[in-house]
Image (cartoon, rainbow, N blue to C red; front, side, top):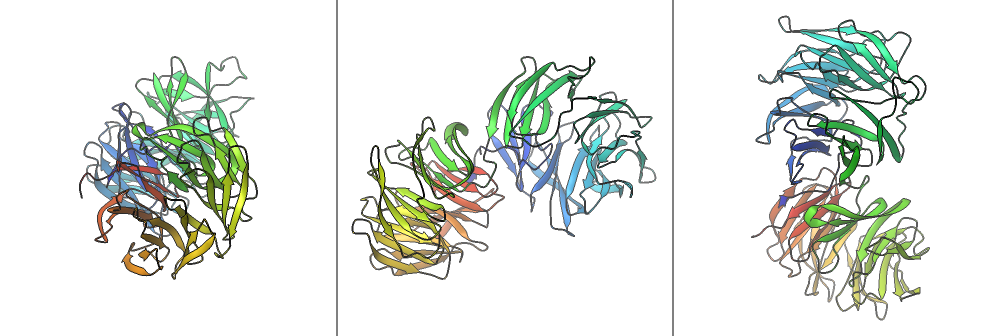
Length: 605
């Protein structure tokens, strides 16, 4: 399978993770194990795969030829830096010296060197020769009496000079290439002791600016290594994470700096409001436009002259639990996560609607066949229905399940909802225009219901549970027709379109084919080499089905042959659910790292 665009923003825990390429036509950001390159005009995306754990930083060389990305790994193990060729989108070199985490990366002014900074468990700064792909020298990044360095920034003009900063430390370094050494000089800030969050070197190299966790900005002389100014004196811009943060900027050459309301020299000139604390600022062109990345996984494009913002990318900030296409359309799909449900427009990979329910987790969703309501299952035990056009609430079924609603499905006549709960009960709800009532309770599962599928005639359904059973129910007489037992936690189940067989999977990594008539096993396949299979879906003709799970792979299977025909590599987190759209145009998969990946369905098999 081939990856297409995915509507996702940079992972919110990567400071300065969003960066604009010097060609002014692309932006780059990390998403789990992956580095995403996105064209600004077409929004086409390319994915760089090579890291074995979450990407912690991404930088682009000033000449635009190289990308460097670092990752996190387990304590004591080496954390890789990957050097990429931007034009060919290829891995050039894997650089391994640091342990635990790559905290920061920076290319020198003329792209001769790459500077890398190790994390807390490493504490070293290393200079790499880009052409030779080898380390030149290294040194502890901060003095023993100071805290950890977390930022490395190169000089604007000199390849041999760079700055590191962090908790109570600001150092200017000089590279002595002949002796393969780097020499630090501690910068003097007088009585001020600050935790440094960001650094920007002026274009002429005479000064550099540092932003601090207390909200003030320090100005330091590069040659003398002395602080010459700081501010604002009274009103500071706190870095407290909040749902919305006001941004205040002034443009000085290519530098975006906060301005103070408290002094006559520094006054607010322009401001905008964005959703979520700001984690990244990156400039496009000569200051006419810049991009803002936030902790809510959103990317804004800001026009500096008008100082207006436009949201160009957004995604869930937490694990995505379910995805569904409305009946008969491939242009829309719905996803759910903690705090919200979102409706997406597939051709443009754009968010159309966001339904927010604060401090709640939506476990499952369905859209009624007539397209008039979104039915959702929540951890507070309620079932909530919303209008799909406006997102306005329609009704709430309170206390539907005592241990949260974990699965939900609607009948094709739109008159009943089948729900499953954390306590294992399956409940049938009668839905009418103004009232909804409990029709029946089916009590056989003893653990959470993970998946529910209903036959086309609305007379039968199958439920999968973490208790190791799948039960086929008669939902007219409300009795059990068949029970399927296996040594697994069942995570997903699907009817074959002809409805004489079902397929199941779960934590035992196997895919089971079962007869609906008597519950007997027909076939068992090895579905995954590692990890649970959490989601599956089948094509409308029953010829193919897809699976995804903890191995992070999307697999397309030939139903009759029981063989994998295509494999999609792209997810960094455990895949929770996936769906084939009506008409077999796309496959959409969602995962625990908040990603939504849209795949082109293979044209031929």
